[in-house]
Length: 341
Image (cartoon, rainbow, N blue to C red; front, side, top):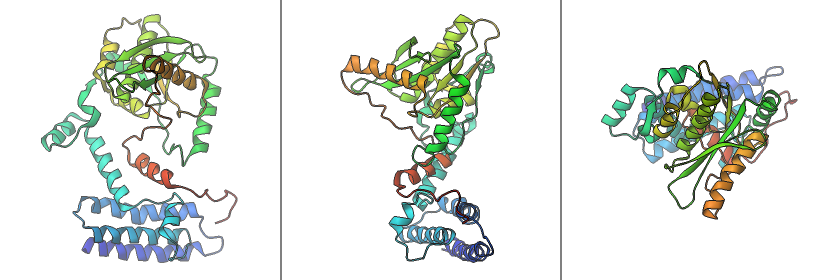
């Protein structure tokens, strides 16, 4: 209760500051006041409270504090219904903040051997990291993963996703050394399909993976593309729509099947490969072609729709989890860019 009282007092002080500085002359825009609330209020909530055993009443108190802070930042009356405030897609509940904080910390621990040992000792879930293997140094030194941009939620950041697709299309189109990977899951079998295609959808290679996890299949598809480049002696740019697969290759820990594919391929000397993430289901020609090929394999073998869906799986990072929840309930558009406040 002392921690909650302290946060409440801090929030009231921050709210007075926001009201004062946002009303002077041209004031601050909503985007700036929201960042101020995130920095001074939300950060304090996520710093300590997720690690407390809170009852329902205390959780409601924290949610009330957060709502008041965001209403002040948006210059909304305190009587604004909670449903309409949440439909703006700019704030999160305490339960969502707590889940994002916990997931991000667990994901951070799985990145190191010591962290994984600690999680096993505490009997906490390792998730898909339990079946991962370390990529050997030779293969890892020849694989480069481009940085993944933040804030790419399909519901909140559609324009950013479209802009990235346009930029990558200009850069990669009509390049014979660019390949596209994708994967799909069989509906009634514990298997997945991994495919590699060129920009026009022409199949280069494919494989059925004896693993129902779509993340493992995406990693295997990238491994197949790397193996193809090693065998032909071409430096390839590998385009995938799986964020988690890109993150796993960056860390150097991938599924055992994908790692086996990398190990069993003869390689030419000095072959270097680059992995690029592209937003899925946004109309990039090669990505769409690879997706259709993977679904076609599943449908012919199963005569039913595959279960990959038309959404991007949420990666267990703090910002991605919060963006996902905000995007799921957003109903109102963002303010026009030309507005002064």
